[in-house]
Image 1 (cartoon, rainbow, N blue to C red):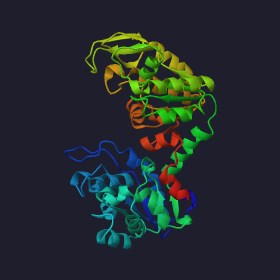
Image 2 (cartoon, helix red, strand yellow):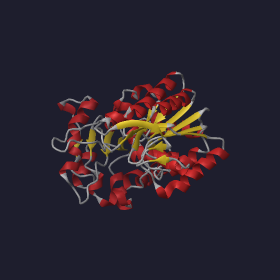
Image 3 (cartoon, rainbow, N blue to C red):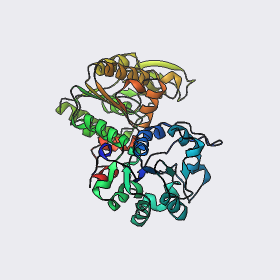
Image 4 (cartoon, rainbow, N blue to C red):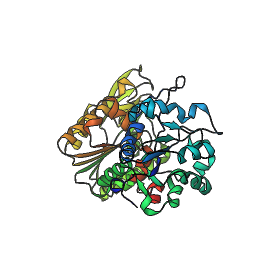
Length: 402
């Protein structure tokens, strides 16, 4: 494996797997959040600055049967020009296919400083199937392969896990974004300074079982919030009213708490909750001890005692991992707990802690509440980061390292 920062791209055509799977307005096709595109720019710029050319490939959305205009990467060309600072004299080229004559001809005639964006990889079913022949056709477009799409690193797809084998080791590498993602994740998973506080939220215990079990081997404290907390409360004999609960995971919750006791890991649950009589922002709202929620009421956010406890634990941390919200933060009346966590993580970071935020809702929260630039690292990969912290080998990373 070649290290991206040490490689000289002069005269080279770099085939880069980026993650341009950005949300588009359904009517105008305007980009609603360009975070993933902006994250790829430093990698692209380094190659261009050194006299190389760039061929970008990505998926967008989940097209079911071949090409669909609403999933075309053509809609991204104008904004990509802006991000790269291109003028009309040097605009991003677009190929109306990712393999085939148009892509081949445009890739073959690229000059240093040129950028070519290929059409959506998922217009071919072979992409998600990890088809070797499809990967080989893609590989012939470039001299060097760069994987800079951490958000797809957990997928064994043709452009992420299969294509690397068609390039010699010195010509396959991670881009700057991937390098940063891996460095940040490994700092937390393998080199964490203690106390190491993991904050795990979201709706379901079943979505987080593996990450919780893996963190029991590494964290000193685990904060559990969001809907999943009520499965733990019921497992401990609490009354949770109409709160979300996975009945089939009650034994799992007990096992996790027992293992935590054995390993001297402190599990922190919110002692009180903001409760509502229906799942809606205009519901009647009250508060209750989390193990004494009345029938017909549901916990939708962390209460005052829970916020104070969580803040205190976070303030003492030297390493912080945050994955998942503390409540239904999309509704104004139930966002206080998640906002409190975001502020506490930012404050701890300001005092010297290393903080990594990952997972779509957690990232949305730090962006929404204005704390994204006050934490150490915000991951671009939701599912990929989750699987990394579950201890799984990610195909996109393994393929480069092979």
